[in-house]
Image 1 (cartoon, rainbow, N blue to C red):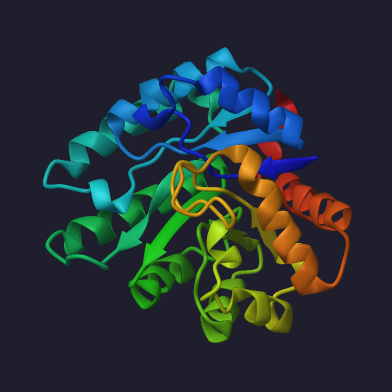
Image 2 (image 1 turned 180 degrees about the horizontal axis):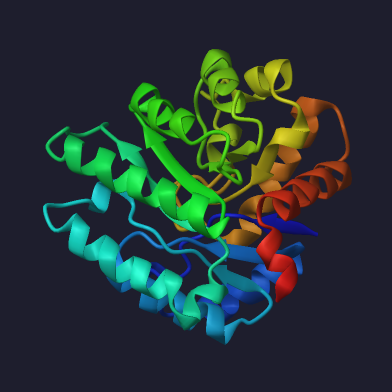
Length: 263
């Protein structure tokens, strides 16, 4: 049994056949799926998905950096009201949040402020962070280090970096790397770099569905059942069985997301 720690099951790509997608995930051995928010409308949508699959799909709340605009303070205020209100007990993490300067730095200052605000939520609520980072590692770590002693932990989602970048992230002792379909790509160096510097105790599995489907499904819509390909790839890279990869990464997910045990 495996846990998909990051799947956007609320998006339009799944509107027509979500029951079938979930059935395939269960059949493949996926026992839980964690669903991140990206903006304010997505919160309502993902809560509806999680209500439809209680004890299986679990919600997060946060503002994804690519969605940060001039109105980010109003958006964050509305999100925080939900997080701190009666329904806040339902959320298992703050995210998807972070920094992304890959395409543009137009909203750089807004992203920095928005991310730091959500880091403060994590400290206040003791909920882990689900972090998106692209072309912004130095800036992101600068913020996280300010709160390192007080943060409960979290996931550096969709890690695709090199050995040095992995080591920099993992200097934050309560954080892990989220590994998904990119690890299966022919061009990926993760199969060599991860075993060299990252113990499996610092990794969780994810799909980032519907994006970045693993080989042999590359180019198709990704879904949680495809996580078996990620587990298979890591098992080969680390020289262990797929069952061991599933067990260890599940233990890691349980450690990072302790609130899931309450449901």
